[in-house]
Length: 468
Image (cartoon, rainbow, N blue to C red):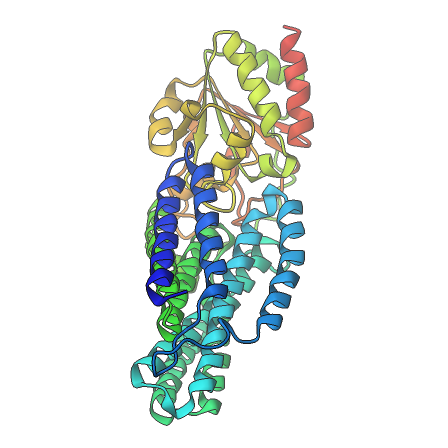
């Protein structure tokens, strides 16, 4: 295959990536966009096996690619692991999967850059060395940081911000060390400084994410995704691959835009998200949460309240995903609509544990997209809402975001369900949300708690409602 044909096919793969991002910008075209992106990735992968990079004198190499057996073997192993894992993963675990995939991508780019650097040795140009250093630093930060976000999401470690005395100075010192060793690599061109740089970058990635609280983890995942994209683009420069440059730049740019949008949705700066734990005031633990009185009800009580409502807003959260209750919610909404009740779904931009989590979940149940209302659209209507049903959401409806300065979510725009005439809160227990703070809305006299699995509880509500 000639260089011209190879570049032309690479351009077609890049076009697929652009069209994929365009498709993913809307729920109606997201599936098509995903398939187009997969096609582009397939083209970019397969074409490599048919391209013989010319020698310095212009003649093609005898083999299109070196170490073909090792590469095919690695692809087979990855396929055997990846396909079953992707099929078995639950929607509730999708954010963790995204974090792992993102980390693996950054780590792979860093390893490729290191191997390429070792193969070039002293023949590497200054531009290539700088690109290699950038790839190693950002790739390692993305890898170790993504592992920490995975552990927080999977609750293998505390979801609260992890801070320690002098933590900000340790982070700053590690960053200075990374920059200093980066300069050492560029000047000395040695293997030892490059490996030291990789180790320091891995450490910095861990320290970078530890101070982030659970509610802000989705923002960090998006930021690390942007880091991985930039890493891939830099490795494309090192490997002289236009396709990697295109794909990495698209991921880096889109990830950066998404990070900025999510930070705005959380009502804080990116710096405050990453390092706000160092300046936040300590919160006093409430040991009497379980002793405070709450008003609980039965499925029959909820059904009666809904039957006489004129407008109902359903607020889905992570608990809905855990219970896999999206189809039951759709059944409840259809039943209410058949009774002439106005029904809408209030969607917070960061509900769940990744952007668009609730949109994907409800789309799986074929909920009409027209019934989904974004936060800015639905908030002014809560004053005219008879019943707000909160299903597994907690932090995104917690009034503390507006009333308690210094708490982890203070300043975050919330769904103002407290303005509704009645609030029905579906929860398994009185356990706090992902941010680890109490929700005063649970103790509001107009809030009725329905304890139990969301799917089982909603099924009983639907049965009771049908009998009215």
